[in-house]
Length: 162
Image (cartoon, rainbow, N blue to C red; front, top):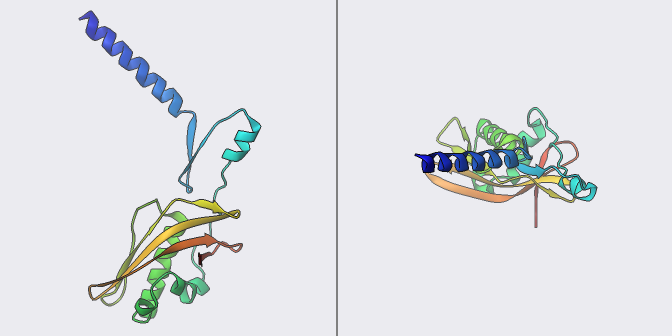
């Protein structure tokens, strides 16, 4: 019985220490990046993260033209205006708010549908960037486009060419 009590006490101490250490980290909502508290000013400034600029909805320009950079041209040619708009919204909201690896789906007015997944935010030359995969499915055929998109000064997303 005493051994069980000691084992339970050890477990409680380990659990408490784990909770204490976990309390020192925080997850920046919307960025999927963890930062750690520090008293060292050099380390603290290196760990500082910024919250992404949030725009409420994709612009008409993004919906009508810029989305074409995010999907395969042969798929874009087969989409209706509504489907292009749905694809643009899914792409935009996945980049803006999407959890890493979670699917953002869209459905067109015919047999077209799609899904977008994004990676974590990374800083590239001071800009928020994310890798993405946008899959368009039309009558069972899959058109997969991958790339990196970065947020530009006006808050919109632009595909970067490497």
